[in-house]
Length: 215
Image (cartoon, rainbow, N blue to C red; front, side, top):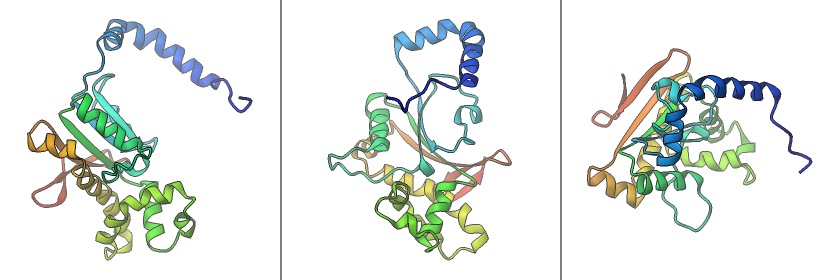
């Protein structure tokens, strides 16, 4: 394991600062979480982008959200093929084991994964078309969304596709039998959001109009 190293010192110091302050001030709460288990009311599927900070946006503390992050906040279609599916496994656990009441898909502005999909689908990123590209094959999930926005003006395409990533994921969630069953029995509700990381804005998907509205 020569390729593995100890944690960088600046992160060690940050940890020690957290342990001496926030943890010590709330140690009873942390111990309760450990012994009683997690009971989050909502699952949030968001992007890996370091600028998207779900707990800060909603002022949440530990134990409130079951958070899954991946490139471009995508949910693939239901594919029980015996392969390894991280996002699908997270959705299954949240809905069937934790029994969350809400699943929230959170997209964001300036998403690099979405831009990659836009470049790939428009022929500007042939390297993403290679079968060896993990990013490219993951972004194949968003190809149906590209078909919806390909005629949008060039300057608006990225933002339109960012929002399509949320819509595609919401649509794919309903291909999971246990999600569909929970939704139809009103034990689960699905929500789509998009945040502007520069302006701090938040928009929600309105299923009645098929558009995002400012919250």
